[in-house]
Image 1 (tube, helix red, strand yellow):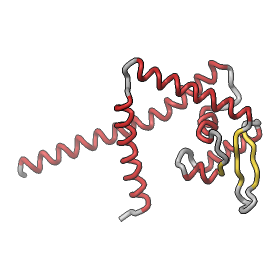
Image 2 (cartoon, one colour):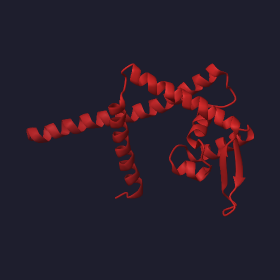
Image 3 (tube, one colour):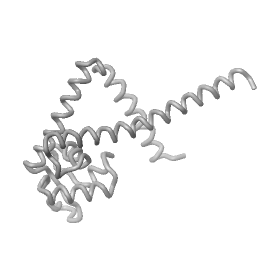
Image 4 (cartoon, rainbow, N blue to C red):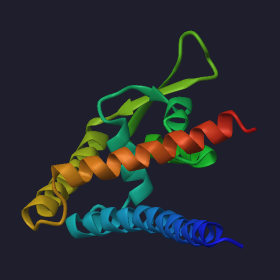
Length: 165
């Protein structure tokens, strides 16, 4: 075996270790994000909504959307979207209305109560963004690099799903 092929094998193994570490980090960050949101809601005394539901309200924002649109954006697992939308409507955080064109489809938008939850999450994210910058954890260039790299991985994975072999 040549030194070159041994080196290639070592580089591949090192890349694989780094790739698996990155995957684990993405999973941990998502769980940690949900914990941070949960802690914020406990701090402000909002206990009737969970972190996934709060993030759902934040991501809907001022839009009127269908469950299918939320799933296609890739934010949520399929059955969780329908369940959480139903709960949010029942608790008064969202309005829902059947689509005129496709009666099977339901469009949802935030109520005033839902917008207040969205605003709590938005405020939390603003504080975090300010803290990351002011403490020198991450600046504009760093966030651009991370976002660019993650979008490239997202594009690669999407291509793998759509165009396998």
